[in-house]
Image (cartoon, helix red, strand yellow):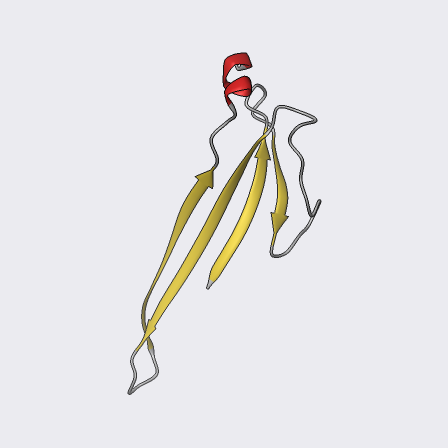
Length: 80
């Protein structure tokens, strides 16, 4: 199973808002130009292995991957 979630984080205050996920949609096209927020993507992977003969679950693993895009040079220069 794969589950994607996008967050908006204000780099000055640390305030985080969930923008888009499988369960909840605040905005379908989030814009960050109106504030200083950075969009971060989080993908959760859940993998299960079953025994093909007994059909019993042998093990499972969950891991996360995070992604973001680079800031434009104008924002980098005005950051901080």
